[in-house]
Length: 161
Image (cartoon, rainbow, N blue to C red; front, side, top):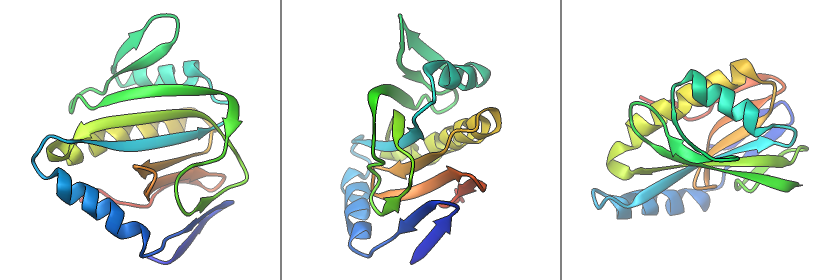
């Protein structure tokens, strides 16, 4: 792919990162192995911000005192949330940004349902980007960048065909 720059987000792809992602996907095949997409949202975001978007999408939410996780409508892609008490650096490989992560959202699905799950995940991040100003990076298992939201707006780096 090469180098992409999105406002202050800089993504450097290397051929070394690609085989690992493909190997995981190929190994998963139809085995039912769980794959993970990771949404890293900048500090300052709240659970209420995320809950607003999830409610709009009519997602099933497991909520006690805090949102712990749930299912996206349609694909029933599972998700989990982790609020970082102290912000942490973006963990996605080859992404260098000036902001830090305050909330990480993970999406879990079987390889056979990847396209359906991605459709639901993209609907969530597009709506979240409309509703909130927070920057974020969506990646496949911290390896390949699928979307970036920065000062310039939302860029779906990896299109769903």
